Amino acid sequence: MNERSARYVVVNDLERLLCEDSAVMLVDARTAEEFDEGHVPGAVNVPIADLTEFAESRDKTNDGLVVTMCGSTGRGEKAAEVLCSHGVENVLVLQGGLKAWRKEGLPVA
Image (cartoon, rainbow, N blue to C red):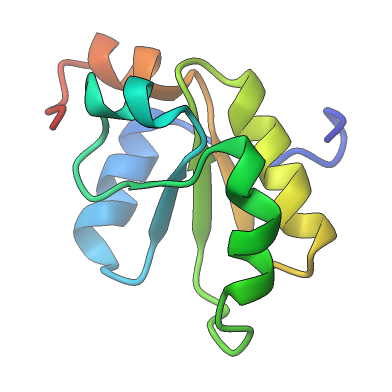
């Protein structure tokens, strides 16, 4: 996903979105081991290798917001690219990933 097409959300805006809209899906693209070491509460772990299958099996009638993330930003961008290439719309990338989330002192599960 190049910078022109990447759409980002900052930590404070994501925190607000998660509180206001239970339909927001937060996809953490890190490995299962990284996810188990700490993740944003409510995130689902879908490693990069599993994203195509996840995108293809996703309910296409659900047009809710999907936010991708990783430890910083790189895999979050790749995850958004994969999801968009499989027809998932309304995708944002968490700018700074879990690192930025932790920097703001927000809870980690």
